[in-house]
Image 1 (tube, helix red, strand yellow):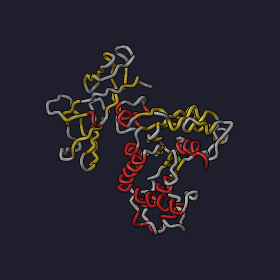
Image 2: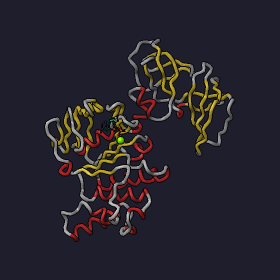
Image 3: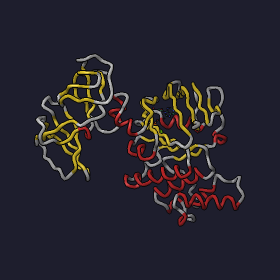
Image 4: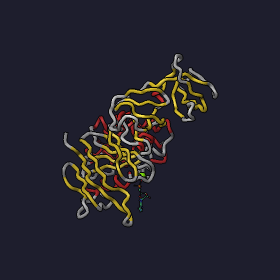
Length: 349
Ligand code: ADP
Ligand code: MG
């Protein structure tokens, strides 16, 4: 499959200070990628560079194999065939829904434009609201109009910058699934920017976890969770705690939680001090286990409850039990580790 987008060694600066550095990314045609990272890590800067609104100080950006940005030359944004959707919808307040969607279609004949707008309204399930104005719509509806407007001119790539941030949680979940369905229906290539991992996982095929302007890991949501490459990714994605231990063999560790054998090998010698990543779903209740931990906090979350448990050494771990399995603060629970994915980092690194 060919790549729609290739970024090599990108560097972007503000006032000579680099905020994006040594940034590489490839996006296959039809793929939905995501840039996920804390606020201020450089996500929007990368997106603006792809769209052509941001100078590139090092590296190259290619769209369908064609160089569009280098430190020496830049293709103007209008010629990049890129659609953008922002957090604040940015609809034209004095234009109807239909006119907003048709706005970028001035090269089409009237009848072509009308049929395209109709198709887009249908795609985002807003056919009934074609004549309304933006202020007569909910936030979720406005964002669907913004998406339809960006998709109408048939761009080769769609960029979405925190598109769900102004919406409440329920709507956010629903709209992120809608957006994925719509993009996949069109086979559209897209990059989503967000700081919310649930959103990233719901919408994207691949996610790049960014810290200080650099992708730490570009991977499937499953691998980011189960095979994080470093401590930043391990702690940024999902819940988890580190428990101290020692390597017994390249794929076995001994810790306060007992001996854990995993599916990958580590290069350090036997006895090396390490930290094992323990996810809440790695801990199971086992009535026969001699290993006990005391409940010192619990967070009810509907179908399940997240417990914080304290081990004898004072170290904390978290675990997730179905909410009908109810325990109280101070209870001592028999537990065991059931982890196939043994994630270990060298102590102090
Ligand atoms: P994100 O989208 O991940 O929150 P941004 O790409 O917006 O991050 O910003 C990255 C860094 O660059 C931040 O430290 C931000 O303060 C800085 N920055 C962004 N835009 C400008 C600007 N126009 N001038 C100076 N600094 C900026
Ligand atoms: Mg941003």
